Length: 519
Image 1 (tube, rainbow, N blue to C red):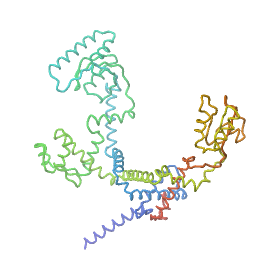
Image 2: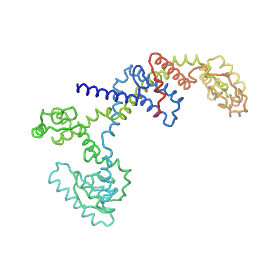
Image 3: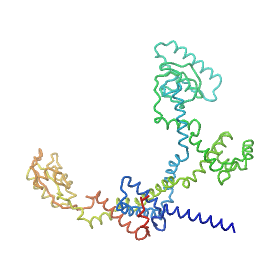
Image 4: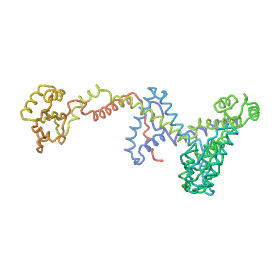
């Protein structure tokens, strides 16, 4: 009996918890059966209208825009756009960029960077030094004979440099003997520690004794020194260098430690001991959350990371912890889930809109022409324009002949007819300008057609005539293509939305809508 009472009490608490959650963030609308919570609508509204007042009129207007976008996204899903390889790759790229900030402890990373910065500031290695060096590269498998020979040559060069009072000999030695000839800046954690120790230990103008690094043998000269910049300017650079040197930045190390505790990371000593001693195992190595990781899982990782077993195991554990966290980011962080969802919807919206409207409005010649013919009056000009040709002729007689001749031909043949008939000889008789002229476009059209100011005659072609007619609007849709394409695109969108609205099912809870932005 007591068990039944406890069970009833548990279900009662659960029901009240769910009811409270639903009241806190109720369903605002259903679009084709898919529930949209009030919080999602509010977030979208504030993202699109960051400075807008949340008055009823603005919200009601936005409801239509929001529903339209959701119906378009549903259409993109129905078209299978979300299953294409290109879409999946682009969304995965965005998610990878986004999760970087979730897979590190930013406070720990900044704290480690600050400690490194303070150490640089308090020690000798502050700022940067600009150096030039006489450098001989030595491979890892260098013979002892070659090593002694390189060291002997560098000692001889150094002895000669010490006798040089002007410093010009160093530049000459760089040109003659160095495998690297250009000066460069050195910052802390950027070069091998042996090089860093020497570079930061010299004053400007000083030259070092020969010394070895993993790359080879050097003689360094410090050219100039620069003070350490403020922390905020170099913070990200320090974190990046720490990552390079230690393979994982301090923030990620700190996060991995926290996640191990959160997901109850439990190593299996028997499995790990067998792996370390034999190099392989089929045993469980550790458990994380509800998942066991075995030697078989480790083998796949190790094949791609050729290192010692201990380092491979450390890397495998770290990667497993971060991968485990990665699969739970959407559940743990609503903000992360919302950002990914918003980007997904934006990609779908852009692609379906391009398919339905953008591509058609630019390439549907028959549709553009039909829309133009049906709405020709929309494209009438405020002031008439003149379609025709301006003729500058050598004599008045030639002007009459040209006009009479062109009247017999289609407009698109006028310029060729003038070139072949009147300008075929060595001395052209006509200069011509053909086109669609608005008032102000051509001084001669303004003078002879629109009755504007007198235009000065063209030198050597003093007799001017025009042939054409005034028009209230364009003859062909190509003449207003840019504006027409925009209008046609709007027309396509309205038609498309009408179809989506007719086929879709939209339910809006008006009572919940009244509570938007009231919290």
